[in-house]
Image 1 (tube, rainbow, N blue to C red):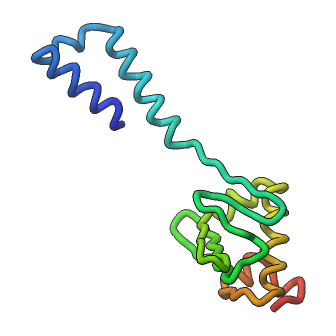
Image 2 (image 1 turned 90 degrees about the vertical axis):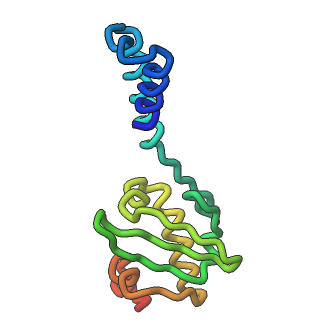
Image 3 (image 1 turned 180 degrees about the horizontal axis):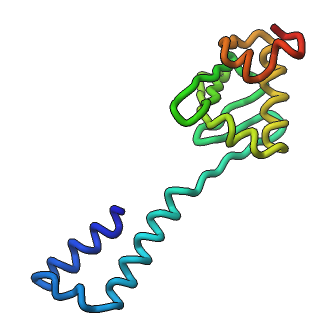
Length: 135
């Protein structure tokens, strides 16, 4: 929306009014700018390796000190903090929707919990830690 608003402001200023609205090419350019703005806001990258996870912030999954899950209006967030103080927050459902990525992160979470990482009650329930005998 910002791209389109910016374009309308420039066209209006340059034309000295709204005479530009009769040119179909300018409307096409504004539609393209709107699509670019929409598409750029819906691109999200998460990645993981054998002992790390990245969703905005890079963390070491086998060196976690805190594993929390908190609810919000749209679902659940998984909040992971490692021994170096780095914290990554990601949408729990989005992470679980990629089985290979989830397996890497979940194994690191389980290792860290067995190594003494703190866990909140929502994490125990959502990660089913009670079902596997950890809580």
